[in-house]
Length: 310
Ligand code: AHM
Ligand code: MG
Image (cartoon, rainbow, N blue to C red; front, side, top):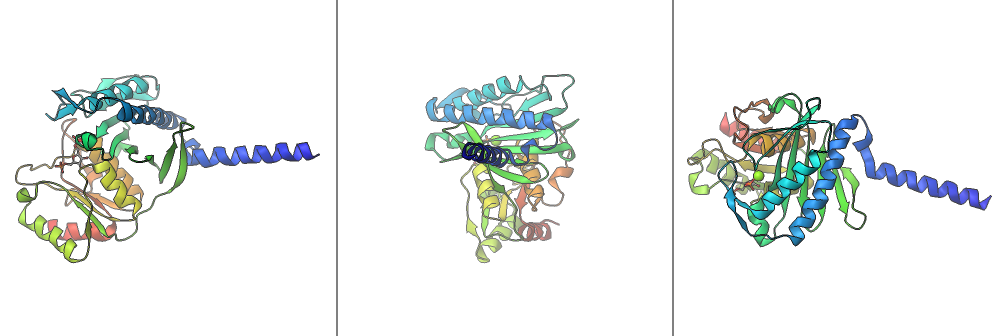
């Protein structure tokens, strides 16, 4: 009798842990789940590479003309190797490569990714991240159906945006991502991350940022969009801006690999993501590596941006 009770209790604990870990990942589309599981494997490998591989610069440039660090290349190789095993992926395209790479003709999804965003911060040991946008049919903003990012910081965390935005934490001892909580933005936050070279900001943009500071907003900008946007999201709101400037009339951040995935996260979390005037997810890139001005935030801050940019 006691034995049966113990076995029953043990089964209950196992079932609870299983559902806690899987959260909503198991629900719905198995092919999407397969991609997200693959990203978990990728994140574990990239995290190890960050800890043990050479953090210096490579002698190569990526397709946007940025000097790569060796970890950009290693991370890109890890992702390509793992995604090559996933049947549901039709095609992949990396920020580190010029062209898209076909995988499975009958695959349902296209995946665009930035293997190691913010890699210029690698040498100073600040947080960096990987970003993945999962699309159907084309890489238009309107066709993104899910996005995932991973933050490699003191802890490794993964955020998955589908019908809701969920936070997972890597248990490094078990090699598993454990569900933590659902993430939602509030109406208004306290933080701003204003990107771009300040001497090149348009005067109305400078005035807008100054006004946020006058309202009491505090500066949070590390130079890595993954930890910067992660901070604003987890603290419940604020504004991250990488605007058009005199020297970069289309901003710096790339639509497919950086902007659309984060726009999707912020919108699903109850915030907004615009290029100044339009919803970022209404944009259609002409080239795979196109950039755009971008603003991500909670409702109050984005309404202020719209007032200034209209
Ligand atoms: P990367 O993909 O070459 O790392 O560049 C993207 C990064 C973003 O993470 C970050 O927001 C931005 O570049 C910082 O740019 P800046 O150095 O101009 O502030
Ligand atoms: Mg990047």
